[in-house]
Length: 296
Image (cartoon, rainbow, N blue to C red; front, side, top):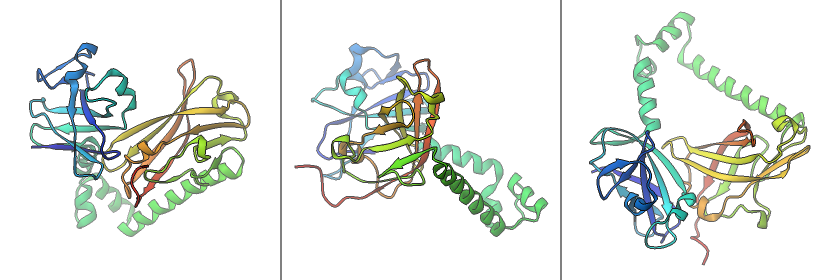
């Protein structure tokens, strides 16, 4: 039996909807994949069970599904039965590979494939590895310490370049976004315009979208680097021309779904009315755990 997990505010009615790479939905009643049909919405949801009052919700993976890659949308329901109006409120989107027996995050599968192709594990743990990485190390006379030093130097240079960009006045940030464009939040806290804590980025030089964000849509994408789970939040434009500024609010119902201690990566992106995409900022996001529960 394989299980899939997600985290959300405790005491809620949560369900999961499974899709394949052909954008077909898993009809758990008919045990078949089908194109979306609004009339069958109540057949697509798998009820999630909460573990105690932990906010951890899980489903038993349908073993009738064929081998392949699937996405799971985790949906908080407003009522006992799921409705189409619940779908935009998803709090997590996970990608899994199902081999008929085991369920694994797609990111873990891809990482394992890369390591297998390059024999990187053998190279880093013993002498005489015969993979591509071993050949590079041997040809350049590089030791593992040298390799690690190089990686650290490149990461430091990348961070320095980002700081230079900030010093040049191209991008400014507002807490809880720090000077390196990284975000630190506390689980179950509200980051809203109403309490002055919404995440905010600005371009004092007004260089985004050739100087005019216009009616662009703003999205913040967050990915759990360990599980591959993706989250999305819509943002707003507070100033479309120089100095340009955008905000993204994170309600407590959303921050409750983040795992304390997990490593997240974020991407802030604008999409113009013509469909042009432009990344405005990227960085790391971390969530501190909370002692207190939800608002009472």
